[in-house]
Length: 173
Image (cartoon, one colour):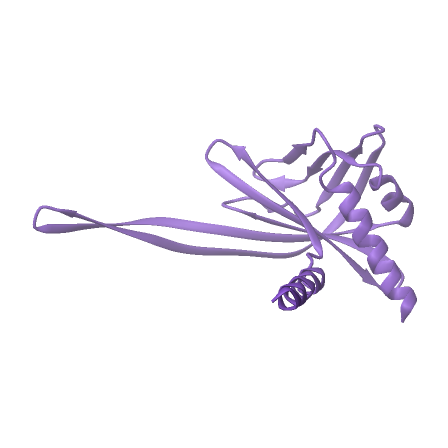
């Protein structure tokens, strides 16, 4: 019995390591009625590294010429220009039925979700600065600017680790 339990733990640990996330994300409320989810991932093409940023929100999309401003914990500012890659809006409705007496009242509440993706070319020196930690990040989105300030590093070290993994896999080939 002990052996089966040990094998199950080892297999679970291996599965968790293989299915580890290859992106880092943050979520917060921009306005009192609008939530926003942002995911950052690293892509390596040829000899260039990119940070792909995906915003999922009710209405936020990247501006035509997206920019990402990053302030690290040593107050270094990085200003990175990017390109718009993809925008999509899904509109649907959520139906709610409530019985009142002998009748059922049904209401449909509209729901929409917008996804927008931009890619930002990042140099190796900029990744080194990100390893210090991201204190504040600003993305040029419309209709309002997406800005998030962190009390402790939530994305900088993880982005740097993803960069090192991409560099390592490229060197192994």
